[in-house]
Image 1: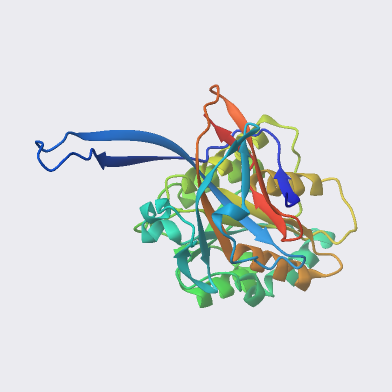
Image 2: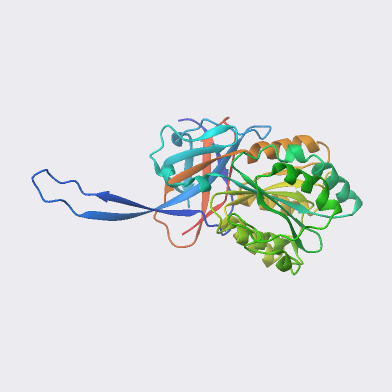
Length: 342
């Protein structure tokens, strides 16, 4: 038996269920009348998974049989594993059973939100400036079909750039506007749009960063496909109900959080929140004090590609159940969200 590296995460309320309706016609002999058409509803779980190497580089070429998945402790079959990445064309794995075909083109692209937790305190502002001025590297993991948005939180939630394919504009906003300007007035656009779910006026009434993350998750949930939130900041307190609600909203939106800790210190208490939100949503936490460019590159590499797994939902009691995803030992580190809600 091949030893496996397994990703095990705690029981936060997430919603990762995809219900796929499959229709099949009953076969009949040639001499019989045409048979009845039956509809069989089969519940399946959709899981976004990233497998990364030591430097955060995406591990590609894995097939459905390479993944070992348990939901609520029960082993489930991986029926399809679709690789979606900026560096390779979209393709289902060779052993795919075809369920990946239900994903429309807009479901296959990725929505990437850069969330800047702004501060002018010296030990934070310096780190923020170093990271934001390296916007070319921050955007390196964005593919040609992906869409990028930029938001921030200081004293309230601000939206700088709604989803766009204009990476040049995104570089300008990250490298200069967020720290030095006021955001332009943005009108809701055709999907995908953050402003359609939470406009700038509503953002001025959001006074806590946890509430900003929750509202962001709620705005992202109805949009198709998986999402990556690159959180560039210094952290917050996890000891509040509003933090749990933020995790629930991010899970429901299929939003993995990749945290770049901008604080210029080897350790600080607020970093636990950055670690926790990344851990539970299937992202990465990276400090940037000593090696900021290496941290940026690891996040960009991880954001750049993912697998979408389809598994049959096991017969479990209603409630929240853990998701464990494993790959053969030595292949890489598995990043996946934590829970399935039945």
